[in-house]
Amino acid sequence: VRVLLIVSILALLAVALWPVIERWLPRLRGLARVETRPDELVKDPVCQTYVVRSRAVRRDIEGHVFFFCSPTCAERYLRGRWSS
Ligand SMILES: [Zn+2]
Image 1 (cartoon, rainbow, N blue to C red):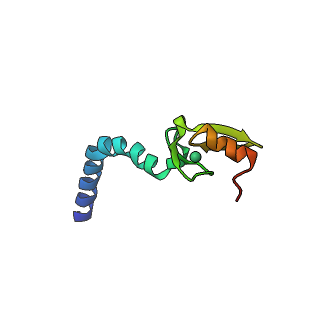
Image 2: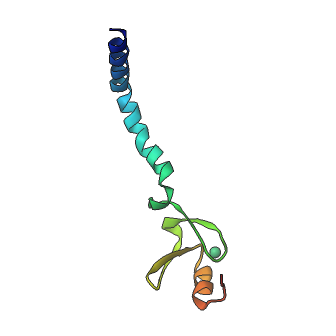
Image 3: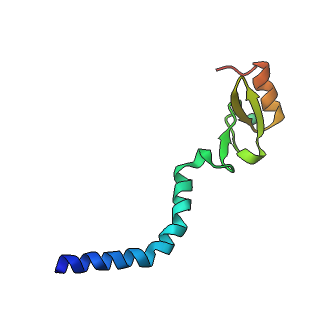
């Protein structure tokens, strides 16, 4: 009987807290899956700077998408001055 009581109290708590959990869940998911979100930080492969994706310079190179902090870095990458 005591176990049943505890379980029902926990169930009530879960129901009572669900709106709070639901509100926080997307934020927690957002923290876990940072690189797939649109306004994420992306790394410039040339100067190693992190840039906000929506403001980064995007280049599609040989089927791969690269993000750069500036057109200058994109140019450098395309010209092959930067190598690794
Ligand atoms: Zn850069």
